[in-house]
Length: 583
Image (cartoon, rainbow, N blue to C red):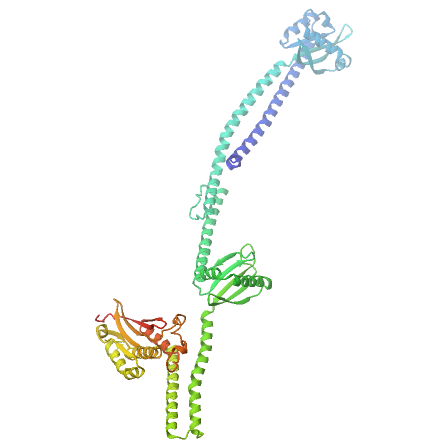
């Protein structure tokens, strides 16, 4: 069945069917014509013979001799009966007896004797058990002895049938020969015609596989050649459109994947047809409870066909998911949704920072202002009259004023850092000088607090570090102040240095109360304070470590912290070595 579906076979069979039909019709017409022709010739010959015999009989004085002469003149397949003289013939045979019986019984032949009309009949007689067809002609003649006379000539059609059979055989053989030739010609013609079609089929298969570079050779200038040229043009056009679509898709995918927001598209069957990695990861991380909320938002968007917004908190991160309805999202005409997942964690954090900032600043400012107001009112209202008490109150007012000034300065520094960044002027100089200054600066304070200072002053400290002296003094001041607030009398504060092939490492450690693990990742955030109950003395502003981190970052370095409760805390500062450093 597969081969019958071939164009070659179909065209070949069509040509064969047409030629066979034509040959059959022509053969049938030719055989019919030949049969008719020979029959007409036989009938005409019989008329001529009858006419001649009648002439002989009319011109001859000896009728019997004329009859015998006429009988002798006839061909072997013919016979003659003269009425009324047939009964006198001595050469009667079975065929003539049959013919005579037909003449007597067939009423048509009465017209010959009675009406002087010629009558010709095709008759079938049984001779020796075989049915044979004869042509029997009755031709009227001149009366003889006062009786109607006629000449009857008959001829066996077996010779005509044999001739027709021969002609039929010859015609069939000729038709078969022509059919064989036509078969070869038809197969050659169909192959030649369909060969370009097969090439087109092969090219179409290649196009279906995505190979648009192959071209169909144009071998003719007819319709098939035009079809091949059109197909090649179509392949080039498809290639151009595919390249354009591919380029657009690559640009689209690149843009979507490079977005900081999650993007996905889905059809009305909730099948995801487009997604970037961020959206995929977010859906995978979404808890089941939020998944139900997400599904409800999808259903609501499909129902209202409007843009829907929902906020989600996933793994301590905050997202806003925006869904918009699209009437047609696929070539099939299906509707769908475009979902944008926007990470609002930073915005949420900044909002919280702003709130914390306002709360912290208000709190930090309220405490010294309240003290200033309270002690000042006590002096002004005369509540305190003793010089010693007034002096004590004034010292407290001075101390709180300094604290308030320090807080305002730090707030200004942070604001300036946020707006302009930190400018550092790095110079190649030993760290020894800065450590020596810090040891002198805190000698008296640590003595009063009962703390031990262990500042390294040799080795790496005497090598040339690349840093801003004033800025690093601010860093170490913040770290030592912080250590002093987290220690008890008898504890030790240590500053030491080491190096790696690429960095100098400065560590500030203490043996104080330590920092709980839950606070470690937030200690460098602005206004962040650890548990006040674990501190000694006055509270800090919560900006020292934040400023410290910003200064270290400005140096291109990194600061980290390690701490164990009731064991101690260590801050490590990595500063990159300059290419001109000694060592």
